[in-house]
Amino acid sequence: MNKLLKDIYDCFYTPPEFSEQKQEVEECHQALIKALEMPERRLVLRIMDALGLMAEERSIDSFISGFELAWQLSMEMNQYEKERSVSRCTAKRSGALSMSEMEEAT
Image (cartoon, rainbow, N blue to C red; front, side, top):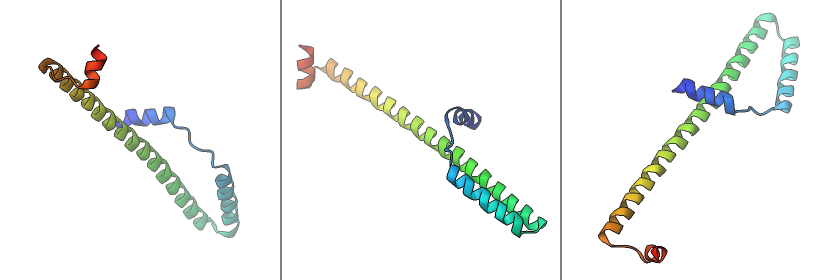
């Protein structure tokens, strides 16, 4: 199921540009490259990669959670409509029509 929802996410979700933020990250990255030695550079890159992966996973998880919530609400609304329809049919059979329903019938 998560594979299907991931495919739906990939199909419909367009990530925001974040052009200003990307520019700032790149500038900070370049400053760090100049200030750090190779081992520290690698560590910073690993941190940046991990943060990027976490943000992507959080975005996908948020989409899936929202989709599942919408699905549950849809099922609840369908159940409500079925129950409402059944109660109307029962009321009609027993002759207990409301005034508005009686007006609609005439």
